[in-house]
Length: 174
Ligand SMILES: Nc1ncnc2c1ncn2[C@@H]1O[C@H](COP(=O)(O)OP(=O)(O)O)[C@@H](O)[C@H]1O
Ligand SMILES: O=C(O)C1=C[C@@H](OP(=O)(O)O)[C@@H](O)[C@H](O)C1
Ligand SMILES: [Mg+2]
Image 1 (cartoon, protein in one colour):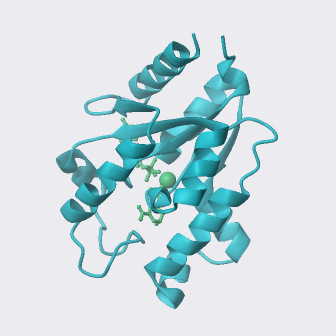
Image 2 (cartoon, rainbow, N blue to C red):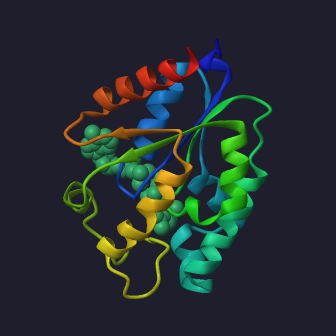
């Protein structure tokens, strides 16, 4: 049996689904380190995500994200909250998948819309004019491709989603 406390957990999914919120809670519960790759990017670049996008465009943000994902060290196991655009980097995702269990957090389009009130200014790495619906369709295929497990967060409190994640991780480990 794999000891889940010794294995990393990678959270992927759409912006607003709860990767950062649930990542901290999961890390506390499992006694693991927590890394939010958005914060890692900002520290590495000395700029906010929005500043990177404003200065160099959304593809530049995706490029930095791809580098950061590949640089992540798994010498000690950790919970990683990725940015929603992480799945555009096959190399980055391969590195994450080699080192941890990839957990796809999902919600319906309407539920995500309810959480994202500032779509235009939220710094989402998307082509100019691309709708949220089209972005979700494009990405859902990628999230599913990389997921070891999928957690449906619809109608769940953070605590309930946390329990679902831990149950599924334990199921994989046994
Ligand atoms: N059940 C829930 N699970 C996780 N987040 C929730 C939930 N209900 C509301 N939220 C809110 O949704 C937002 C999720 O944002 P965040 O964790 O930053 O998502 P992500 O990192 O995936 O973009 C937060 O404002 C959080 O408080
Ligand atoms: O989905 C995206 O394109 C992005 C999501 C953000 O992270 P969250 O998914 O944590 O909000 C952040 O990486 C950046 O603003 C781009
Ligand atoms: Mg986040």
